[in-house]
Image 1 (tube, rainbow, N blue to C red):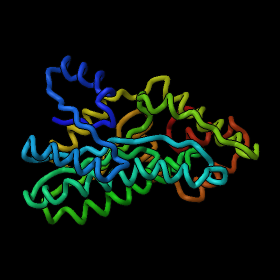
Image 2 (image 1 turned 135 degrees about the horizontal axis):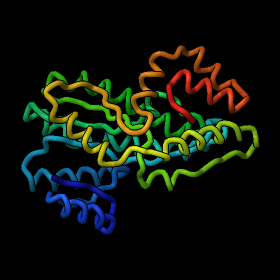
Image 3 (image 1 turned 90 degrees about the horizontal axis):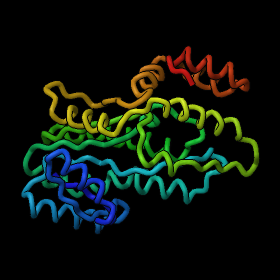
Length: 260
């Protein structure tokens, strides 16, 4: 098993957890925003292991901002990791997988790839893009014996949450969406999913005898995915137009079965 990271100095916690679990994880330097770095890393792994059976695209960054006040540079930075990173890593391993006629690519998206969480425009845009990319990959690669899996976590207690506290509101017009976004996360962090739960779902998605494209996990994952599939576009827009927080929260509970 191989784990990639931008700096080996960041691998101490991973090494300790792997040792405690009795598994070997070989750390490899890889920056998913640099094509040369990705190609070098995958080449090292192939040279050492001889084959790559499963690729898990898990690198990701958050991004809080309403669309009007989000700089293009922020969209570019988030896309470079969350979307282009998936493309770079997948392109690096696919010739090998096609040659073997087997393999599985796991793209870690988010429940925000199914439901447009307010106040997180760059993050939502990147995860919706990952969903579309993955659906296309699934059809393109099926004839070559390669499966594609989309993992859609809800709220999971990871380091990304502590870094995701931006609230750009220069005009002062968007206090309400940010307030509701942070209220949603506060509710989820009362009893969030654990990273090990995501790992278990990834393992199941790869090894199951009954493969499927999408898998949800974490706090609110299943409820939000199933709820958005039922909610009409008109009801979704109407929810955003509600100005009273108490009424908004009650309507959200009615639509998604989640207390926020």
